[in-house]
Image (spheres, rainbow, N blue to C red):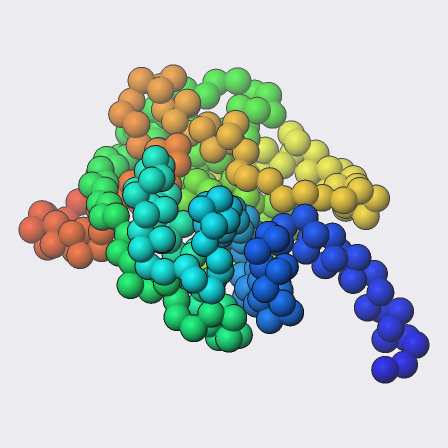
Length: 301
């Protein structure tokens, strides 16, 4: 390896070493290089999602701390220990299922690297958990006019709320995808506009913008000074380090808050999509007469 490649690798090594010193349990350190390699391979190589890595790391470290407190070595962990750990846990059923999945995936990596012989969590059954999701009511053209007409202010916040609610109505996008939109996601040319949504799993979806939504977006961009903000934001990105944040609560709860102010039924849940499973939705769609799911493209606001 030449000097140039060595100089390129040097800045990366302190980051890996600091992560190892702060996160690796003593029981993994004491079981040799194969266990350390499996730990780093699993958390730094296999898991690419930041939130999954953080949750799995917390679950595995808690379980290893539980076994260390009871004097159980890593190579002697059995299914009864995993089951006893879940039985003693006072967390909810979804949290227990997440921790069991983390332990099972981590020990799969240990088996692959010949640290342990068998996966003790493979035969352990997690708790049963089922949820019944409600049905979000549809919104009609009259209620769309009432909702957007209830926002009477002319400031930037009111213009933003009108554009946000109209985007949710006319694109049927998730709240999480809408509040993550950036100026670069609005694709504009002389003829048409379209919005690029960043969905779950790294997927992208482009939806054309209808004329009334285009007008609301133009009004908001004009009031917010989007062109000036965009240049300043690009400069700030080069000068300071950005941190990843969860979706803003103030914008995620805007549809529900504005709906309550307009005194109409709640059409926008604050978190997630509250819809029945696909098979149940298909059976209901076949049994019920067809109804419009929202204002048509020809409906004027």
